[in-house]
Amino acid sequence: MSQPVIGITTFISDKGLTLPTTYIDAINDSDGVPMVLAKTLDAEKMKAQIDKIDALLLTGGNDIEPALFNEEPHQQLGEIEPGRDEYESGLIEHALSKGIPVLGICRGAQILNIQQGGTMYQDIYDQIDGSVNQHTQKAARDYLAHTVNIEDGSLLHSIVGETKIRTNTFHHQANKDVPDHFIISATSPDGVIEAVESTIHDFVIGLQWHPEGTYFNDEPSRKIFHALVEAAQK
Image (cartoon, rainbow, N blue to C red; front, side, top):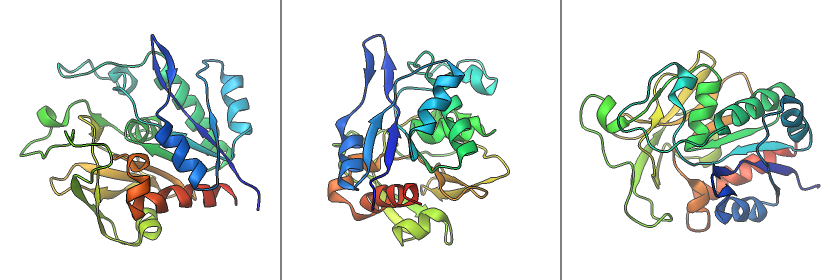
């Protein structure tokens, strides 16, 4: 069976394009072929990139530009990545049009939801009423910091085979409302959205945590990447 090509987006800063090797390691170990995607704001080149891959992996990174969802910057808004939102929005549009699998991780889950018409919290600690647990852990990236409750019957449930898992967590932003063709497929005990997925595509899912960071010490994390690669082979 041929190994599918998984296109992976990068972090963007004045230092250039960067990518933690954990994403590449997870794809390689799952028998996928990682292809790092370089930012372009040329729509035809975005489409050309999507035409050459079998699945799209939207990685983590800094905050999302609030103008993208018609808001002014919150006081706790962190660093943004110029051009990345526009670029990844274009990739998502072409990927969904082509019908290839899409996996968004942390920031990737947020831009996926926003591009499809959802909304988000610029800062969960200030904008969510009630007590919010720690979502920016101080522990190592491979430490499973808190529980996540998974919706029975969701795509995520079918992948990991459990309705409760533990995950790592490194975010202060999160999805708020989802578009009509999405569902919330996982939440943390404090109600923060941990996963969203499309109901009209075969494999379009966004996860708020970082399974690439726990790939080698956590079975659900491995199952997620294996499922992405398997879906890309179809």
